[in-house]
Length: 153
Length: 293
Image (cartoon, rainbow over all chains, first blue to last red; front, side, top):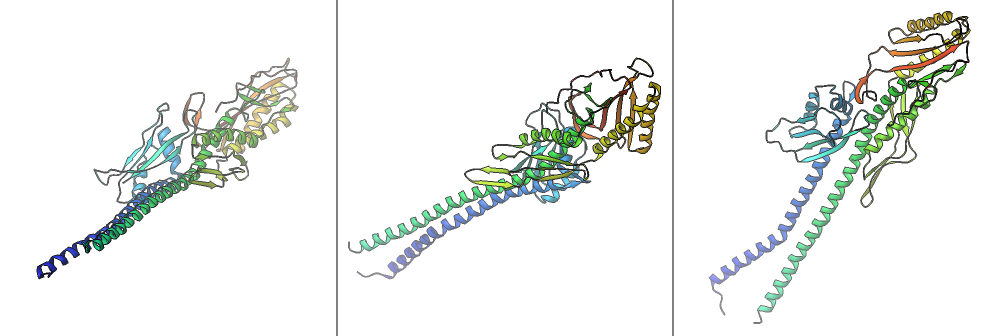
């Protein structure tokens, strides 16, 4: 049986296609694995960054007073009534990213003042990674802690 | 037909090879995902411990403020039988009831601080029993415990931390108790030797004036002697309400149990003294119930 020129070209094309298919079959799973690992590391890093940003904020002082105490006394006693410095501090800690910093009241039996601070970077800001901790409040038999949350994009 | 066998064999080998790669990638993916999720849990646990280390000094500060405020209002005792309207007697004739301030504030601080640690605890976070120590010389309070603060998920991680924390506290309350003791000591020396009720009153006001000029600008000492309970001017007995007021305008974020709300309040120490010649007089007392924190 003689194989003509056309047959050789067809066989070569077939071999190239099978070869590319084979290489893709080997490379694609590794490439997909790589993407998966990067995604996981980014997911892990984002959570850790939200925690670390909140930790940094809570480690700072303003006019010699620890920020957790300023937040707690603003929340319970509205003193100081203006806590805009928290927004500018958060912008320095989390530059170029949008965030939402708030207290999530667990019950409303105790009168309290609102604490919601939003970044003004983007109108369509959608912070998706949240870090939570407890804010220690001045002694009150009905309520000693409240949940503080920082969501970061 | 002969040529097909190596072709099928080759196809099967290639399929097995590709399947092996897919399987190993799938296993790796599962393992990496599990590992990253466990790592995330461990990072979160370490971060949680870091959060706790920042929360404890704040809880200590608010516990101390509340303990000092309540203790000062009640004359240095949280519960005592020798009190009137929940203000303690520091001296009844020759009987000295001056409180052991360091011990009493330690005990009151611990009651309040334990409430905070209970509120902070959850299924993964446990606190040991703390022992507070107030150091009046260095104006500080330290808490320590024999065991660790633990953040734990038994199947995945255990994070432990040495639970010793120390904060500086405002020394105003210590100074106020010092002035109170000074008042009682001077009163014992001078008023007990007074010849008459009018002489005793004069001496009491004189002690008040001496202490006011000594601590001027810092504190105001007010002595309010009551009427003679004795049978005559020479056989006298009287009760004095002593109040020491902080002039610094410092206010503390505390819970006022009489108003049932949080507010900024200044410290004020009040106590009673009974003195005179007629020691048969029984001071009017009422048992002061301990505050249920």
